[in-house]
Image (cartoon, rainbow, N blue to C red; front, side):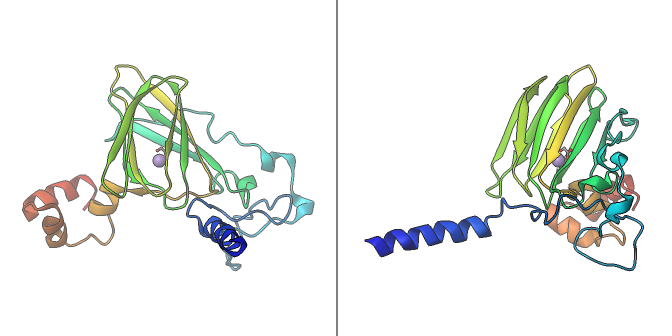
Length: 218
Ligand code: GLV
Ligand code: MN
């Protein structure tokens, strides 16, 4: 009986270690402010600045202080405070976005390969949805002051159905969550995916595919 319990504990521990919920690795030191200039050192992440040249400003950022320009085809804008714009985040395993929406704005279906997303609607009202790997669609209208969570890697969107602007803050358990924007990935890649492939995938004529591609620079 005792060995069954031990096996169970071992399995739990192994599952914990292998859990897909784990994100960036834990830091091995207080901080490692990214040296974004170094190009000849390749590591997973960014190399650290010399500690002697680290300054207070490395741990503060104004990246999210201004509203993004929503004058684009989606009428929305994502501004990121990730390791690229805020080098102090390097090795700390987290980052943040602000997402601005004009009325009718859509943050189009996308996914983050390296992070779970936790969102807070600061202004307005958003329809937020994600699709599980079983193709179940989970969604809700999220009001000011309310949260939503998007499990790592799942396709999701936010849509401002209202007549006012909206603003959401999103946080990630990765310094660089990555983003795969479905319409851009499928129809705007360089070089382009052959239209034949997309026509078969979406069960439409190539003409339709070419029309969509033209909206995304292809
Ligand atoms: C919202 O989905 C975001 O990625 O910031
Ligand atoms: Mn997202």
